[in-house]
Image 1 (cartoon, rainbow, N blue to C red):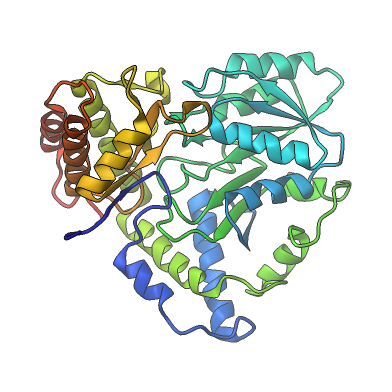
Image 2: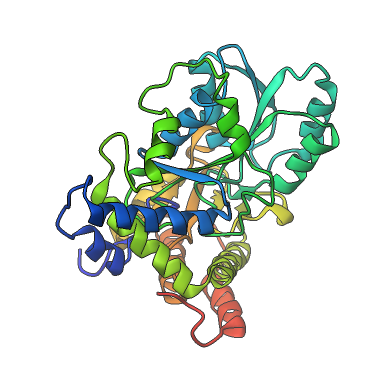
Length: 393
């Protein structure tokens, strides 16, 4: 088909030309001084992005690898992990834990909201014997566009003087919305390269507190590749215990430079603004958001419910074939009933206008009942809030 493909899934996201050119550099010796210098720059910039003074580690992996690394470096078989059920990725985190021999205590949810902070706090207060060793929360649940209040979950642990570690999945929030690793008291944060960091998949990134590192001394789960102790030791000199993803790291440095050039407050404001415009379009179409809590709306992804009797995957296929645009599929129990719009990473107003136009035409072509005017509602909002030079693209 003529024209560019619109990749509007919430990850992997569009990769900027600057990052593509950086990745396309000739591969260099990962034991040499040039690579060590580049690796130290990447780690320093990642610490600034995570907002931490502690260690950051990188694996050739996805976010799932980061989850496993968090568990095996801090916990032992039979330990209990408390997981608020916010959506598909919270359930996946639970599956990883159970396969590793951990016990999982689920705080049930309806997949339309962030973590139930009151219910989490009650479980923590009730755990007077400190059976719970970690609380694992998805900051931004990519399957439904709902965020969780990490500050309040940390407060619930502190108020109960509970020693459990706090794990946060920041895969679709880091680089898109505010995240404060040290200030929020997070012990392990997991991210990946293919969303707000504007890279192809392949890098798993973790920010690790001193408390989490100390927990490794008594952790009993087997660890070899995922052991972060040699990683942290080698990283001080820009070295890695196994072969790193060298060319992805070239791209990582370039992407982090781009984020810093725009300024993180501007990056977050851009994501929030484009997310709000998307939600206004959905409201004008007369469709419902999956996220039912206004305070929990995501800045990086909007999940939309299809009217009864209409299959979201059929609509997505129609839109792909007619307009060369990919929208995110519904995941888990949302499969077939929802579609997702990614407004994340290397993205601006005109790209959103094209995305929403494709959706509006696709709804019409697929015979989905809706009210016209969503694109106009979004454009009116964007025009009314525009600032010259506000976009990074």
